Length: 357
Image (tube, rainbow, N blue to C red; front, side, top):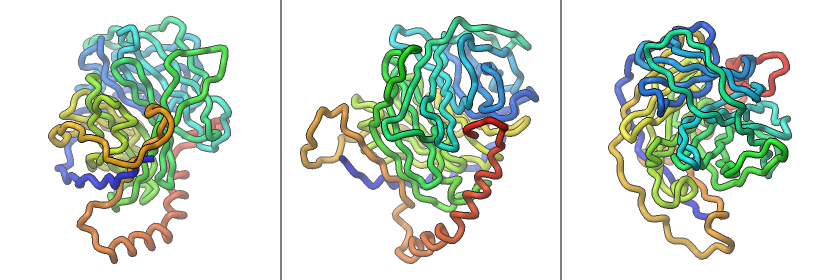
């Protein structure tokens, strides 16, 4: 397994004003965010547990809901993320990740895929129904876990990113073909290990460690994950996400949000983020200049095919920290971790019968 210290320099950016706010009072637990391909200027967003099998098309500049889309053949146990991308046949599609499992109790999770509707930013209050969704019934090879990140590349390759308040998230590749009759195993392709940087957020150190969203840009050049406080970016090369995780990510501090969860990267210059809560803001964030991915680090040979080798990215504080600051940070983590996890649990709204947040 390759191991690389991924200590991308922190970017201190001016706090932007929201580009818009969700105007629809039904959008209270926005857990994902993705830009339309067939619908320019539209972002799609879904509530997580407690809502029905629907998602919303929103004018990103005004926050007004253009359409509500009901997904045929789907149920919402805990939809934690969504993504838009072209499938293997080139059809613009919406993927929805029913992967929330805060209690790590679900032996099976699901992903749904439907053709993207065509919605105009001038539409208001349209109600649309999809054709029956393609369904992936999935299990993790290591047992049940919580996951809130879903990223889909331009050829339809999808990745699930798990969520951990201890900072070690796993990246899994979704099998290429849906199957509503059989449970398929996700393929583990890498890990992401995060360390707190003392970035303010509602949940303290655990809020910096828990990955709440993921995205791949439509051109396949950028892979991003976010926590409640920051985002990490990898530039993708021929090896895709597994190879990129061997490299040093770029770190971007995000605006403070009530419970930031969704992230979209429509191009390599901007990211957009949203948050749970009623009438919360949608932010546009400037990204650092793009740089081509470097070659993978040299290492001793590893047995087995390259596509099966897990990779790991370790994101730690920037190199300017002294030894004592790291010691103090470790002590601080030990003191506040329990309190932070309690606040994290309390801040994430629980719905009766729900398995996730």
